[in-house]
Image (cartoon, rainbow, N blue to C red):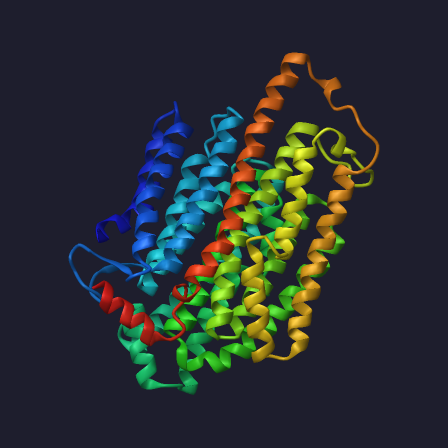
Length: 488
């Protein structure tokens, strides 16, 4: 059974090579294969509730071999990532375009899944690089001048981050003699807090903060805003969340003696990120830029939960992140759907789309509530857990800032909703012939149904959280090592 753990990593790589070589049926092959791959991954996820799934590649046990580790948290991230990519590929398929970006989207998925499943910090670095190399290509895929300009800061900052990451790995191995998560956790626990070793921990926090746009966010709006809406959905849903996952895994398994120090640092960084996110969503009227700052705002809220280093706060951050991955992908996809169907949006005048697209308006307003983590949406349990943990751990003022940030993000989206859907009725069919209008409406409906399905999945996260919340995270390295021994 443990051999199935290689599927989420191996399948996207093979698909990426195959779809790059094969010109026809590229989307059908990729979508169907990924959909089939979800089945064994879902089976592993169910089994991981009893004990984690561990695969030692090549037959060599850790720390000498490459080890994959799948528990409920990591496998849940894998499934959500695969769902996002399937939906994005479906959107591109409905557009009936031969898109050269497909292989690189699949390579990103391989790097993301590998980051979630690895049990070794050097292999985490390798998976980061697989993901980043593919993302470098996708940013400039359109070959536009503004894309190349936007890619410069993205590439430079991520290369600096990778360089710092590699330095941190080298020092970590020099000091502790291993890079396996379980071994590192044991040896750091035995050594305890050491002032000089705190620098190593801070190096990793800097790297993961850069990758997830925590405080060091300048690269995100400039690069994500030049992407197509479909690629924006992939980037917004997956790339920053890998940094979040890496922070949760390392700080709760490896850097346990340094949690008290990290709690204040991460809290201050999260606070600054929330403030910047609020200012961004209020300032910008451009849809893509607004969505970019919505991502930054949600990252700050997630790290607020992580900063508590309590089981309630960490579990809340995990649940909220899983929901946020789906919601952010839906935001980009529904915006692209509206723009493709009705043309570029003039944000200075009301568009009156409610008269032409009532179903779209309903789904959009549900997205607004999902972003705010309102009751009956997938983000509500996670945000509530983070606030409860934050109030008991930090000052109430920080919790108040999270609540204010939530409503500011919702306000910006409601303002966008008013601009898009309210106002006098406009005639959008005049630019198309009758046959063209029918074809466009068919593809529009197919995409809207796909978004609705994803939103149903976000609601299922609430049910998922209720029953399995205690299995999501490992608060201390003892639980992680116990799971490793069970899986072995």
